Image (cartoon, rainbow, N blue to C red; front, side, top):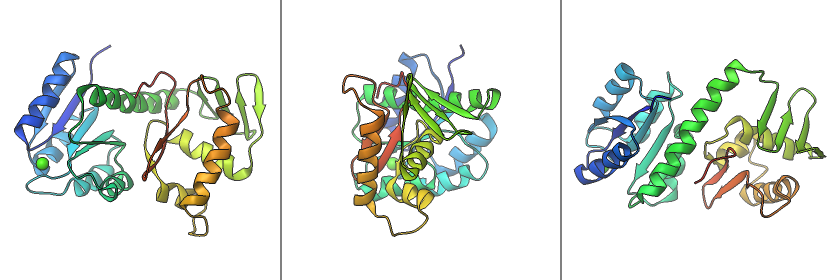
Amino acid sequence: MNKPLILVVEDDKPIRKLITTTLETQGYKYHTAETGEASILEAVSNQPELMILDLGLPDMDGVDIIKKIRTWSNLPIIVVSARSEDRDKIEALDAGADDYLTKPFSVEELLARLRVSLRRIRYDSDKLLKDASSFVNGNLKIDYAAGCVWIGEEEIHLTPSEYKLLCLLAKNVGKVLTHNYILHEIWGSPTVDVPSLRVFMATLRKKIEKTPAQFKYIQTHIGIGYRMLQVGDDS
Ligand code: CA
């Protein structure tokens, strides 16, 4: 399989070098851009399969770049930011980023995040080819038409809210979803807040993640949100 082309958008030379060297060791192809304007040009003309985006660029805010790209592309975007505040990550995720890395990050962390996001795009294209009336991830199966959920051979009984939560995570497998996004998508109103969401998530997890040793489907991002991982993801 051909290694995907990755666009690295970073104005800080040492960090850009660290990222591109890491990509090289894994045989990934890459292009680089140092400004927002150049990154959009690159994204349009070379159609990379994934973008690694620094939020603090000299000419544009990274969040604006995400918003622009999302008007025409589903390209996975991993945000890299020195800003450690959660609200910057949340803003980037809500604008359509898939994931985030906080500087300084390790090479292993970067590669793990890359694999998760690349899987997401492969899953999306597979789904287009296959029947989209069900979702399968390891032992987990959702039959959308029947509204049923199985873990292996066992049918799992979920409440309507738990079912909607699970479907939303499944629809966005590989992508970090913020608390606000989930609340808005599922309840559409502020009547359910983050502490209540935590309770719904805890009961959902109890039902689908019964054995502690087995693969974990739902990953918690403290202060940010949740993500469903695909079996085989190793971040
Ligand atoms: Ca920067």
